[in-house]
Image (cartoon, rainbow, N blue to C red; front, side):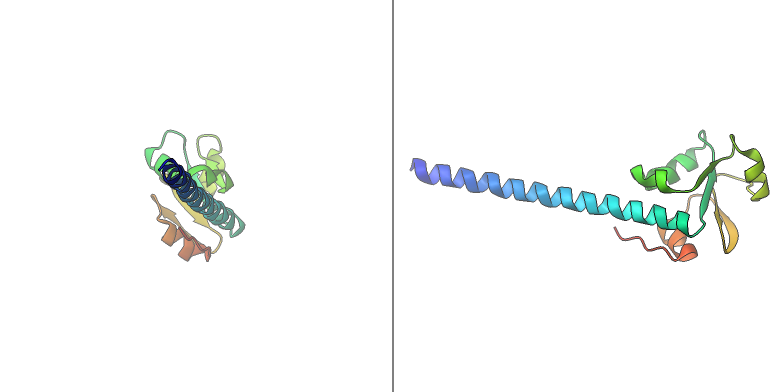
Length: 121
């Protein structure tokens, strides 16, 4: 009876460990896709213009999670002239190398369409 219990316990622990490993791999893949998407946006010339106090800018940044560090970002409080030259009139504003700016929080699908970058979640 003790052997059956012990074997069941071992299999249970191994099963749970396997499930946790799958979740970790899924999370790593998700982070990598955010990184790849953010890097691609920057490579394609997309720039987000915003400020640190702007709630919508915080929301947009939060969509990228830790990967926002890879996005080309201009803080308009720090670099007012760049923002004026880019025609920024509100925050956030996304600038693109091939066309007009887009104001407001942008869905990843819109950013992907404007740049040709793929995002898979």
